[in-house]
Image 1 (cartoon, rainbow, N blue to C red):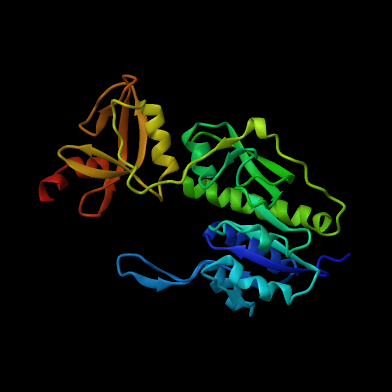
Image 2: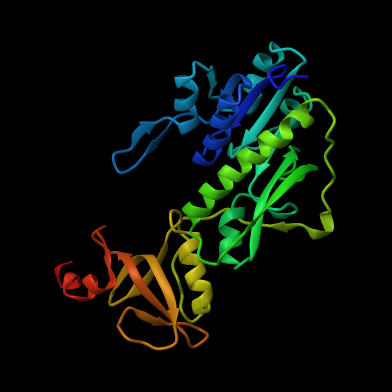
Length: 298
């Protein structure tokens, strides 16, 4: 079987999925359609913006489907015939079983964790926040239950303890695309069968909430706070009340002594030393610039 002998429907929305879609296109796979969320309003101007995977699909003349409910495309999938496979990467919606069953061999999912660890919507952030020494990407067969399907294979990624969310997203997106391309031919021809997850080892991660981003120094350690800054750098961002205002922390490190007013004492007796922040005005600056008079101009 050649890699182009099966038609693929690609499900993806977030930027994380863009790398895998580009890899499939560049490798010559036949993409019948890209399924993504509807265009949404973004930014301060609330400009209607298309998902990045939609833009890539249009550049390659690939049809784009943007259903409000996934089952709305079931009839279109049926028209593609029996030899259609699904690939899903960071789509952002639960796929019902009735849709999964239309694909052969089901829908292949790229998930950025070593399943069964970190089932759920924030596996990359959870690995950073929890100080894990490694994480990875699993290629699994999608199931109706969240991230519960059997696993075809995985790749491990060692962590340095300094990664930020954007950095690890990029690393794992590339690792996921590479692993998908490596395993996909054997998945499609049936020579590679998935192995069930060990449900006794399942760890779930939570949906991040933009309103749950304020550090409370007497409730967590400085180490934990520093990891949260890196894990939540893009979203939901990490805020702290300091010097009679609320700032967003962009960079910070742990210190055992206080040298400036932006070294904040935490539960464990150590300090979170803020290196870079976003002031209430929205301006990003170094801690020294903030302390050297900018605060008086707010």
